[in-house]
Length: 158
Image (cartoon, rainbow, N blue to C red):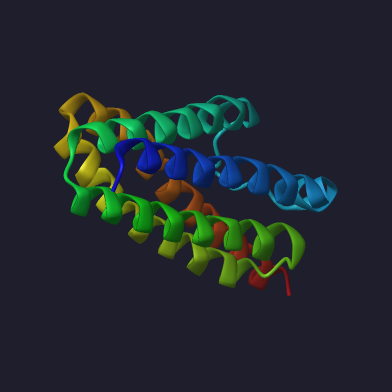
């Protein structure tokens, strides 16, 4: 597989992720603000910093994986990235549009699991890249815990 093709495909997947999540998250901001704030929820300003970082890091990581790792690793990267993005976009739809909080939590569990091969490959491509990838993996874990926290909070309110 051409390294440029891998880089372009990965970049397109990340662009779909950024645009898709941005559109879905913006669909019902009033509903989101009405949810009880969870004790471990990061301040709103963190969201504005972490997401541009995550998207940029995913694009950079894609190009480094494309330039440094084998064809097999590149395919694993693209498949894992695509599956992770599908799961993350499913979370956004389930959470912000359907308000299916528990299902949204499980979608983020899948996104987090599908991201583990990305983390491993990032470390293979470069230890520095692997370290740079850690905030994304941690962010998914925090987001997953928040999704389940919101689901539990909703059940308590019933």
